[in-house]
Length: 337
Image (cartoon, rainbow, N blue to C red; front, side, top):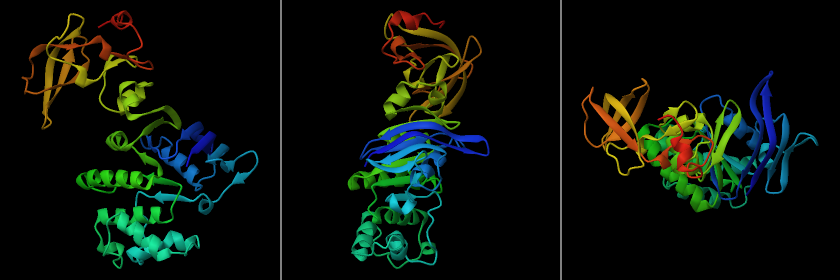
């Protein structure tokens, strides 16, 4: 199932929630809408679902028009054949696991082979034997699995996730990330996932769409977003960034070294300001001669106040908005290191 948005937008009382947006999500792709609270990602998801009417634009699922502002087309939620998983699970407390999973099928009057479809969805999320329990008798992770099962029981063309793991603790969230990703791939689903969590986005997605203030700043693979940020916000929001020139030239902490490896390395005099133990390494905060502070990594604990020198290959210096490997070394070296 392919999703196409043409100039889709939404405003509330004169405040723009989502600026005119063009997007294309390929069939079978796991796409994440990533950004801080209030950036418009949930509003965009709700417009795709049919829960929030857009102000302008067009929305297509495959070649079928779901919304067209000019012609007045606006297909209701139940005709878009979508699955949706909410942040708060949205389970009926008075219904059993079986009936919660069956709810969407009954609402759509798709009761043919109902038990078979429900049990298949329950098996997919590994909740066999819990069909007659109520949500209050389940753990948070089990409740989330019920919500997943309900979403896939209707055999959707597209499944939408609105920060579905945010209510879980850190350890369970990590476990559920892997389960959810596997479930989506096994079923061959097209998925759109909303989160403000960078790790979720980077670890789960085929494609990431970075949003801020209702605008799409960049879309691409996790690798493209991380290594070739097209906007200073994207560089700061995903991973750690050290700025050589504010909002223009940056380098990632993992590309900094404590010894030179070639004559073409660039270097900086630094003082160790703080050392934080991270388990597999130490995170080192250093101060440069101009007073700015950077992050670097080291395998050993350094002494605060120690004066050292940091090195990096010029190919790891990234001019924001460009391909870091597309400009010649002389162009990189022209910046004031």
